[in-house]
Length: 277
Image 1 (tube, rainbow, N blue to C red):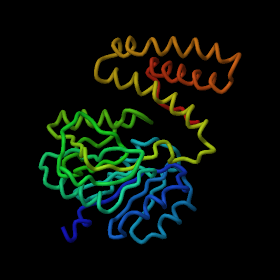
Image 2 (image 1 turned 90 degrees about the vertical axis):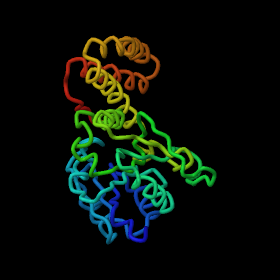
Image 3 (image 1 turned 135 degrees about the vertical axis):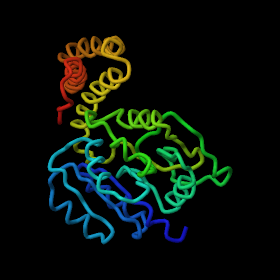
Image 4 (image 1 turned 30 degrees about the vertical axis):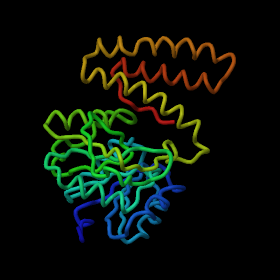
């Protein structure tokens, strides 16, 4: 366990997360190698990140979405384990050590994840080695066996945002790998705080567009076009009615429902998830 940090590389995907990324990385021992993939072409951000001797920053040039940016970083990682951390997740060295202690002993590991909380990052001392097998985990923190998972090429890059981690978990299980969760290991995750708060409305519009697009695409991928269409059609009609209604009483809500409607429409037409707020 003395040099376990040599078997792990930390990977985080950012999008103009200057306000929070340093707080995230400050909680992590400098012995860990860190790769930050920034969904922009901002050289100033790259220079600031790389002032840390253990960190490198890859600029994508534009906003490619989470999955594609993750894949860019993961392809360059040679170590056995990748620890993905969202910039707004408050992990610490004890949590990383616990993930490694348990995850490194699981031969057929795909992903091991702690439990998400809005309270305090902590390890419960009672039954703190307990793990449970699950169908899927949230992507805020993922301890990934890189050697086992590399053949999948990680995320389906058709997803820009939403459901990409559920898709990945399903594909990993299809090749015999296991997804586990630690019910007594908690990591505080703010959720939706990776971007500046001044951009909240723009991000809400983007999230609504992409959630509906991804919902149809995911169901089409696994159950066919007709199932996906029937599964989402009520949301399509509801969004259309609400975008008309709110046009007269609330312009901001009108924009949200308009983009929910347009996200589904694009997906119905089998067009790419190309919307950027």
